Length: 562
Image (cartoon, rainbow, N blue to C red; front, top):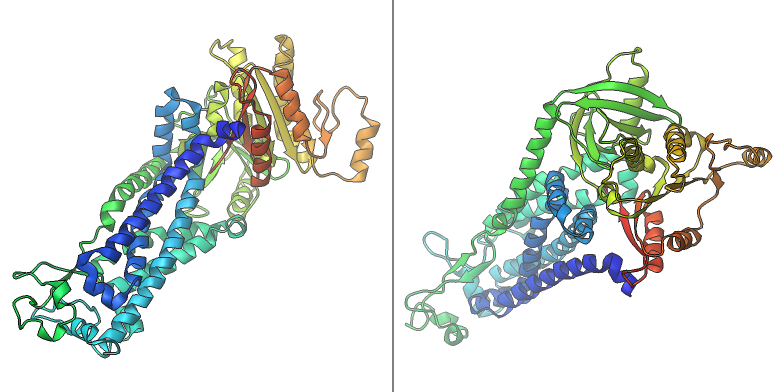
């Protein structure tokens, strides 16, 4: 339990606060509508469905306020920079931005379902009351009207208005339908299988959030949930409840008047909507800034390296940018981790062919004449990630899977520059690097950097500073036989490095145990850029091998999230 608290305690505390606020809002508004005197007559028509419709609405407002904030990436980068003077535990929470975005979306989806079902029942009961299918009090409440037709209780005012017609003709009904359909499309297209296989579907459908928020702000203006208003003389509800036939005839029972509540949703979401609008405006400004190609290289395994320059661009290790290529799509922006170091006069990205957009970009570049500039490119960023904190740890454990090595390429290059300049501020004294790849070609573009680092460390007598292990997870029998024949050679047959390639997957228990043994009093930062399955494994190992005693080895897990 102590180990778990080290890695997840503060995150769990924040989730507890978030869930507590959701529960409080639900319970508070449920009883407000279920017990409030101003809703006695409304509850007579609608029953408990009134409270079941309004309580989720309060939770929806709260989560709709939150859901845009995790994707305001410039805001998060600003906060990350502000918290650089604070503990790593606080900064780590920012790296869970996408997870929290999804969590808020799930809550919105659940509350929308409850809210919708309850209001469908409400409309049905309004309709039945207007048709006189219930008691005399329901008939009297449904028949209330005045000259301006503004103080009624039942929003269904005509025999020709069916529940279906009301849903598609009233302001609350039609906006509710639009909001719900938009939300269904957004959530279903965000499923992992669709997002990875059909990213364009996910990207364009996700922009229905604009329709969703416009409909959300307008939705409450329908004011179909109405409460009793104070009259002069006052309407004695407890006395008049059973005497609807005497309403307006005796002083104790003037005709009750009702009004819809003032729309409040806009007050919840106006702030985040403004921040997000500023975010998109800043993206547009960055899009208009000129980006030039310094170098274009097609690496093995269909990996495209772009070295770019942009006036005033500054980065830190492990950061990422969003790229837009108007020749492919004016609207699509894709995130890519930068592989260059802050010390270089350019920034670079490595792009693997893994979808329509990347395939089109690589095809366009392959057809360029030698020495030509590439297609126009818009760059938004840079944005901070967990890898920025790598030099805050005495010992760093870097794990990359496939193209997931990109943030660590930036880190490795920066280390090389720091050693070259004899930077005294370098706090990190040991790095363990693990790279898992399915095919041998994937190692080629990064092996050159490792060779330079390998020789640099040896020249400075710091061969123990960097320990790296490369794992080939996919191979055939002939390849294994070839490796066995050349096992005694000084360099590896796959990478040309002195460190031999391992075949299969790491034994993580053995690796963590070794790191703990070699660093008995250190704080170890474990950084991953790779699949969720591997993240779960490493997260558990960090908990398992951390010591509760702060004087001994403690592992902190960090994962790249886009």
